[in-house]
Amino acid sequence: DPETAMASAMEVEAATEYVLREELRGHDGSVRSLCVVPSTGELVTGGSDAVVNRWDVSAPYPSPQAEQIRDHDHSVLALLAMPPGILSDCPTGGFVSGCMDRYVRVYNSEGTPVRQFEGHE
Image 1 (cartoon, rainbow, N blue to C red):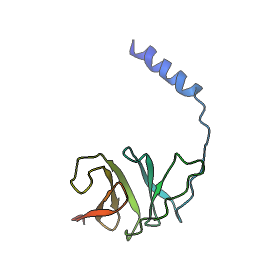
Image 2: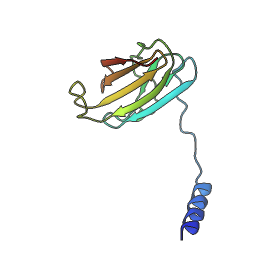
Image 3: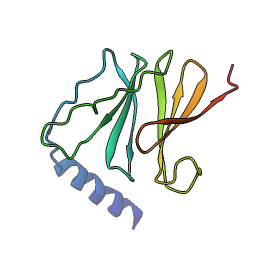
Image 4: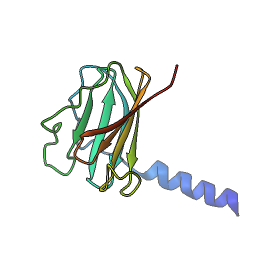
């Protein structure tokens, strides 16, 4: 019965204890967006500081990758992982960012920008 299943699910969720593993610090403002890129295993974060950080969360002490992506002119509000094979420019996948500067940018799995779209007002 659906009510019993929902009650069981709520009991399991209530019994689950989450423990903070690590705080990732690398933005000079609030974190506004994030995604995990399956092809690289990286966590990608976008902030109100107009920066995109790529994190190797498998490392014992994660820190932003050497190169922060600083080609946005405003807060990065959206990030989406892109699987391999969607664009020829990104054969191993990548990610897409949406920014308050009205641009959508596409990056390959190495974090290199490959396309930029505009058109939002």
